[in-house]
Amino acid sequence: MFSRKRGGPKHVRATDAPPSEALKQSLAAGDEPPPPDRGPWDSAHAPDDVQRLDLGSLLIPAVDGVEVRVQANPDGAVEQIVLVDGESALQLGVFAAPRSEGIWDEVREEIANAMKSDGVPPRELDGPYGIELAARVNTPEGPADVRFVGVDGPRWMVRALFQGAAAADPSREGRLGEVLTGLVVVRDAEARPVREALPLRLPKEMTEQAEQEQAAQTNGAGPA
Image (cartoon, rainbow, N blue to C red; front, side, top):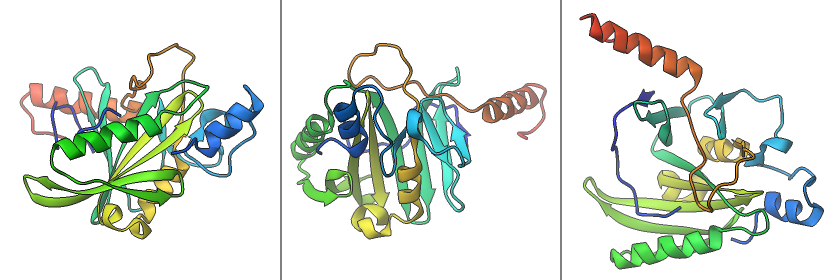
């Protein structure tokens, strides 16, 4: 599913742990790090026997039962990725980072400060990727649980925002956790400012479908 409308559901404000295995191994071995034990993977070490949805800088593994919702602007650039599994959702973002150090510690502190300024007391949790940040926030639909997870990699950082059941209880991540550990980051060679969002785009199949639907509506027919 995808949308070309701007806006969409609002989440806790965030600008974007100790270094992840991907980053630690990169620092230890220079430009040719050994593959980490699990993902999110850098594209240099991603397993090649997995079917994935190609969104440019992010490749999302196909997991049965997980719905992928992609929101893009009229030019086809992806602005938001949300995966849904039952009562849980996972919003993904990927950002530029230095090769020499991770940025999740700094980003996490800023998220926590933003929560505090909104009167929300955040909690720090120890997770498989390091320190996570959790809170119960107020939304137009009522109180909701959120949990931020950050993963530092070589020249990138993945920010994962769990919502719903998987945020309230990490043991309920289930298939969304599979998606996160199977994620692949494709970092281009272009020099980018730290924290700049890496470019994401609609897959070719989605772009063609959108063009067909737009043409049908222009011709006076209903949506495909």
